Length: 266
Ligand code: F6R
Image (cartoon, rainbow, N blue to C red; front, side, top):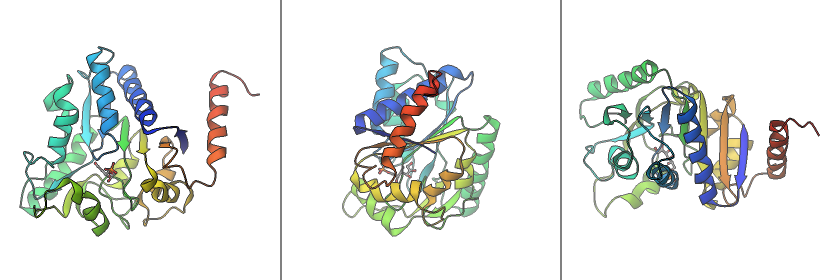
């Protein structure tokens, strides 16, 4: 795991934007895995700004989002499709047909199960995900893979944990129906991405971040599965890194990495 600690959430977003742009500029048919939630909003704002400044084009990009709620339609303001349209897709030159968010607006279980299988196939057909962007839940979830999710899990219907329902309540109106099921990429699906970049900011994430990086490999902290990925970067602000025991070591590793990049073994 590469652990990068930056002074602020703004710098976390700039770092993530650099990584996304790098994938777009170095791959002929770049495939991005995208996340929703409050953490990546700053990243999407930065990508929109770079697009407007003509520093990047998304014409060749295909995207796959991690998850979508079951029980609300795409048109609902809180659907993840609506989130992505609002914060990113409508503001850049990506082709609509190349943007994928799990299709979860059916009430028929068999249709949803087929939709999950189709999503897996669609990722394969696109050649796999080059860079998967992730956030982390307070309970250590990635996508909607809640604690005790199998590390081998694939895209499927998942029941949200109470902690996730409570954390996401802030996005729904008082008394409004709030989904408790989602269609989510599995941990196995996420681990097949060629590289992953998990962003975490703010002190509320510090415990989950510590469990992910320094805790045991455990289904109780789904994000700890990233310890098994050979190209996982965790980018944190100071607050999210606040409980890490080996914080100074990670910072030293980054200095060394830079020196090695410049060809120095000093
Ligand atoms: C969203 C997702 C979730 C979020 C996580 C953190 O697509 O898959 O795992 O990344 O719940 O959400 P925020 O960033 O709102 O704290």
